[in-house]
Length: 199
Image (cartoon, rainbow, N blue to C red; front, side, top):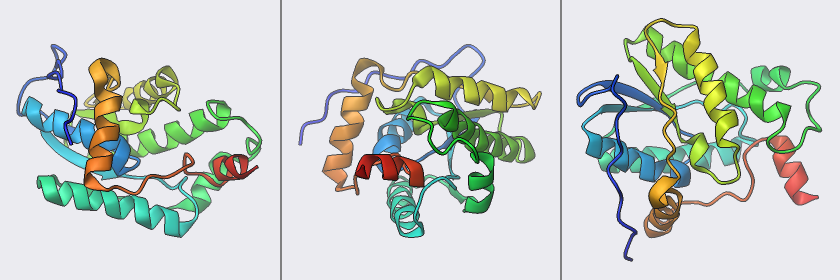
């Protein structure tokens, strides 16, 4: 299959080749294009999988396995974080009926990116990013704002709010996911998004 050409990612002035970056990823279809693009930049990439929102456990395991498979293929370090679903449900309690892109999603993004920023701080990784914002189903500014808030807690961590969708990024990711035969989920991940999709 012919993939649309990728334009090189433009690094901000604060970043240079060889810098470490921790990329929070939600699934292989959303992250494959970003992972390949970051590898082309010469950044020192580590992938971080922290998604306690994904429900049920079987769904979580499938999505994680696909990311592990792609990272192994690209020789990218993979960090498997906790599946602390009880903490996630406590975090979003009272927001169960919020729509997609509503307040529940903000809380969910914040929880995942706060943990990403903490890991980066504890392991000397100065930059973080996330694959969450490449999806057209997500509010990119909502995701980016959560990332900046998470990084703000640490003087040594910055969030890179790159627009992964631009210049065909989302289309290329979709084509790559098809080429690699990745499992394609039909809901965001949480029990409430699944409920709404089924209804």
